Length: 197
Image (cartoon, rainbow, N blue to C red; front, side, top):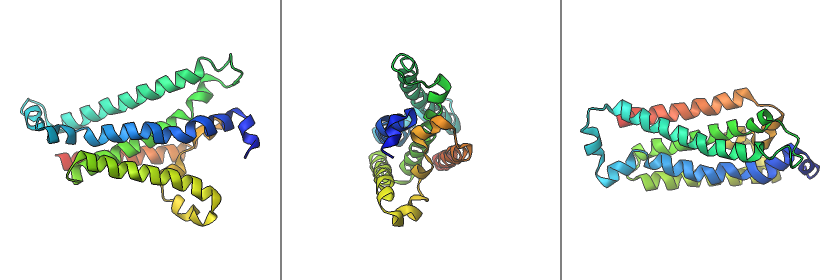
């Protein structure tokens, strides 16, 4: 796929979206792992819950704030490509440039949700963050290795990054994959909510 580097999709996929799920993913995982466990470890969660707010409202309110924060980071990334696109000859519309950010958003929510769930199960938020981060890095490495060895493809098919389109989404979204990633993220968050209750 060396020739693909000469296309907008190939350029974006190779030089930006191939790494963003890892780079921003570490931020999302850290935020997800410390979303509630951080306050518990500092000893302030009981003080927060002493206020007239339900556990459900606290959980979903903080999760919504995390979703918005991730969205703002990706919005800034999208604008950094969309605004100068015409002047640098990228020849992609703002909508075409937006498409790859949607699967990236879904993958980030999935790993943040996994970190949040594990923070409810493991003794410390840091452990949940490290474990989830290790899973993300392992999945990232498996993506590269599966392109070299086809024997790894069955294992790759069971991982979230198999369904992450990256820059390829410029040419069109796979709505089934996107919906699946978002559904898994929601299931992980719901599991964390049940444990937090």
